[in-house]
Length: 110
Length: 114
Image (cartoon, rainbow over all chains, first blue to last red; front, side, top):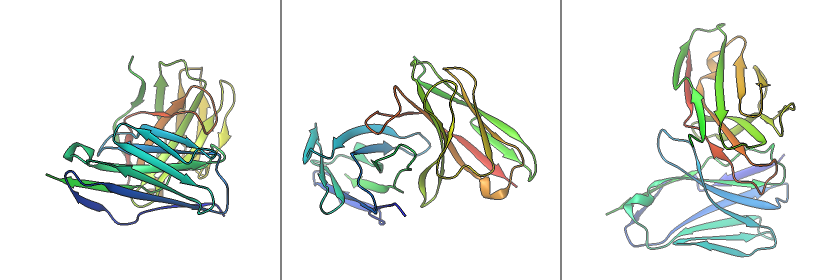
């Protein structure tokens, strides 16, 4: 069956460092992969979408890569700030009936 | 623009009771979705409506029904609530169905079933 896995541990990093989050998927081939941010007590907010024919995409301090051979996406937050502390969800979709990954919680220490 | 709104924000039910979660969007989106979020499980799709007048099952539809009342509104009904349905429920919408469309989420409804 189709499966999505994100970093299971929470990620704690020092302000100014780069946070790298992993999203792995198995048993299917998504055409798109989206990343969302979720703050406590709130709904997710869209950040980036990358297509299967795009290797990398950037938006401000965010960078996403999509490796269809490894079946993996990496999400990087460069020059991290305490305001980046949140849970980040990936959604590798080949069919919009599929659900999201469980998310990785990032805490950035000042 | 309010975006996606959900009511109620919090609800406590007893086992066997029924209730309807309401969702509305003011972005003129065609597609709407209902998810549940449980610790460690991520967001799981319950039902979705690709366009007005259509609804389809998602990953975890058992125990739920939905109604796409009009283009703006998409409700989720629990006919006989069970403790396993204790969760946070999110409604979302997108301009079109499909994986390349950004979804806009509501603030969520926190439901506890005793």
